[in-house]
Length: 270
Image (cartoon, rainbow, N blue to C red; front, top):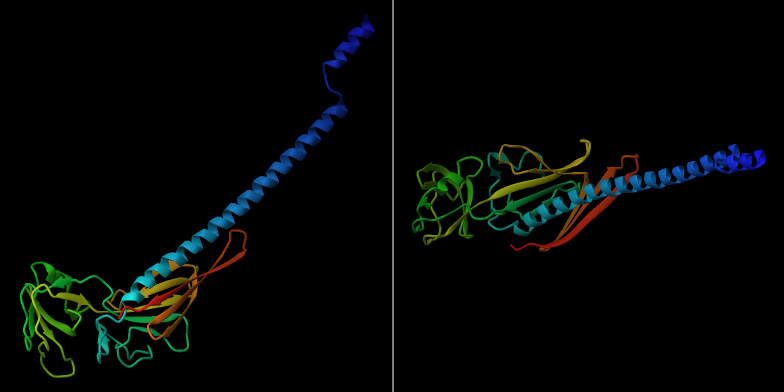
């Protein structure tokens, strides 16, 4: 009886060796699960870092593509200044009479000129040739000024500089090279659209961390950040075809360098 009770008691527990084997097996399983979890976290973090960079590339490319397609509409002929800024300050071109201009010797600066936004106003009354004033619809004069929003295009036909604003009436000059205010060259019906002509510069700044793509509309605000992780751009112009490539690079949380690029072929509309 004593031996039988001893054997029955022994059958209800584990030996030391069995416990050690169980602990070892459990440790192996836990370590395996930890390894899988760590690997999945690394993969997720890498994908997250890559996705963030690619998203910045897409945003930058789409923004530049919209502007490039409209570049050239309403571009200037012989003007050298816009919004108080002049092209003689080291940009490398003589007049603002281009649509798309990649600065010679670098792939990191791109200039555009044209009416890239929707019309800022419409004529509220007909305008005749030789007039030095145009009248806008009520309230629209607030979209213009005599400094940063003073370069306009009238109906896609001719450019003018706003010299003064009184109510809805703009006093203009269509020939900056001649003394005084020169009048319109053509007749215009009411509802003729008035656009603001812009000079826009895109540039890449690798001195910042992370590197950024900047946009400068030459309106006194200076260069503004458009997208991060952009390390360089490449622009080639063949006739009206523009090849645009943006290169991006970032460092993962584990220090791995991640690179990507975004490309587009664009046809200038003007």
